[in-house]
Image (cartoon, rainbow, N blue to C red; front, side, top):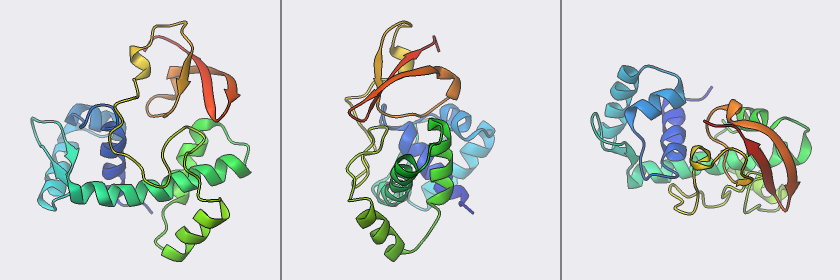
Length: 181
């Protein structure tokens, strides 16, 4: 069973991907818990040296938090690749099941999985597998794209309802139409 800490580190990692940090409100929405609970737990993470920021500031991963989150995300993204290559699951389910599947501690299993999958560089969604990045300034949020435009979906974080339908998959990029956020 995933620890609460792992869930927070992933949420902060992914929520910081575009903005170098995440607000308490955004974090609570992402984790589907109350802002008060989010504030309380991020304070615990701050005391452990895993996050910077706090109650009235954006929360971001400290160097120690980034290292821990990158290990978590490496396993998670390897499991995304495994599921995408070997199972016919909807995109949202690939992400959900990969997160559950990636809850293992064996370094041997991690190494073997990486070898069997050919040390993939990117997931089907375009995310870094081997060295996940906490912040990627080259990406834009779907909410900044006008309805009717075609975009390349590189990361999938947020509501399943944001994506209306997948139009085309080519060269590991998903071309989709979006509805107004």
